[in-house]
Image (tube, rainbow, N blue to C red; front, side, top):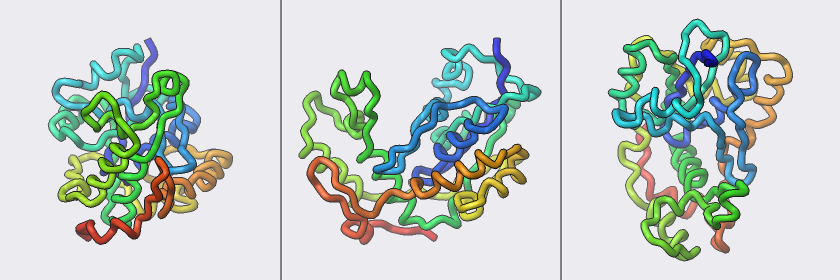
Length: 247
């Protein structure tokens, strides 16, 4: 059985945790998570999101079972996965039992409106055009949130609008970092040359080609301020007045 050392990137929605975990998977001695970025919305996808559902029922062991791996802190192979701190007690259990290295993204230095816009665009206006989803006509991520069998574009538009003008209270509160974990400053991480900061904080080796790759992909982490989906033009400026920003 393959031994793997696990790193869990913990972050609030919109704070680019999947981008970070996906890029880490391109490094030597890291598990490749099949990371890709939607150039239209900036959404990162890949196997790094396998731990998003981590909680008391969906334990670390259960979520990793299909991958037939053994966790070992002494392994020289690292897999970077992501989590939104949806269940703090589950993360406390992981840390207490020394199952993974926890890395928190401190988004207090980020533009909070960017986080909100990025989250809603990437979550609700993105599509998964894998062959299976195209065959089953299930390419839109937003459809999993709409509780009806037949979903029209009007249904999608109305749902996304309701989220964009709804309350964001507590969605972007600061994370409750567990003692002994690593804290990453958002403004020092997601910038050109941010890999130098990551080398220091995460003790990783970053070859020049991987460094260049980081810089080349940064333009895609920010969702565009305007895009057209389902024949409707979505403009950030039309919704930002609804958002309560806690800075």
